[in-house]
Length: 197
Image (tube, rainbow, N blue to C red; front, side, top):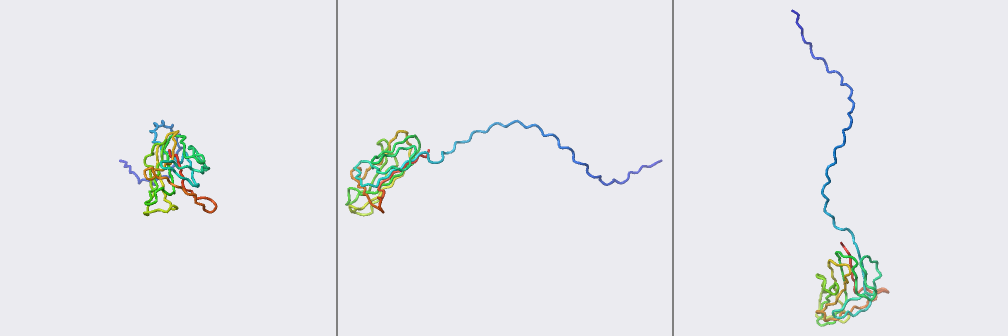
């Protein structure tokens, strides 16, 4: 009887050439649009105005500060004309307001602290009332105090903003002196406004 024997397995043959790349499949359907993200805060300053005063001025008790210089650039807010006291808002929004007053109160012994506040259409703007420090029991006629204020507030187009003297419960006149410095005069009152939103 003939016997068949299986021989040993031979060595692997060389790898064949790479096959041809198949065709690209069709593009799948576009997914649904995601939800719209929250609107970010407005960037940059949307309006601005500035005015200052260098002339001697008596601010009456309960009266307003006037400005003899308003030649700075402005946009979206109308600054006071020279000698005027009113900033006019052209667009509703959120505004940052800063002011500075350097003067002498009518009461000197003891001296009253300077007190000023912003008004919007002649109504007090909340969080805008500031007072100076008083460090002595008496103040010379030539002595000065400084009141600096700052606030952020919602305003409406057409609003008129002024800076009022309420020193000693609005009973003291405040004198703003003209102080020459190097051929010009130092600023004794100023106000700046910026629209933030």
